[in-house]
Length: 124
Image (tube, one colour):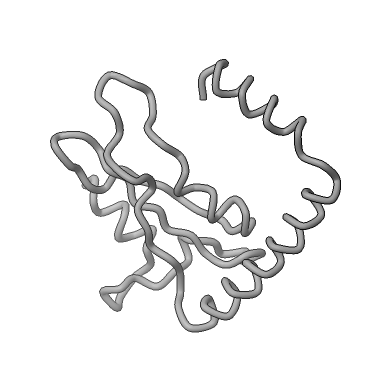
């Protein structure tokens, strides 16, 4: 995040009232409840890391897709496993809130092994 973006984020934060903050905490609990209900049915959640590929010649693209795991407090890993127009397109795997095993303990969709093994084999 550039210093300009960071400054703008800090400035935006100064306008949040205590009531707005408390309402956001209540909404977060609602999100966690929905996430927990879904997480009982699956080993993890696989999404894109961003709305598009990373920008050419810049350090990073949009991190907006990381907000979900951040709001939930869920462990997540992001890896540049895809590409679009010769630019990296990341994949995000996140697990359950307070899950000690985290995303790397999720069962592989291919039956055997763990996601960590699947990811490691990508670079062999």
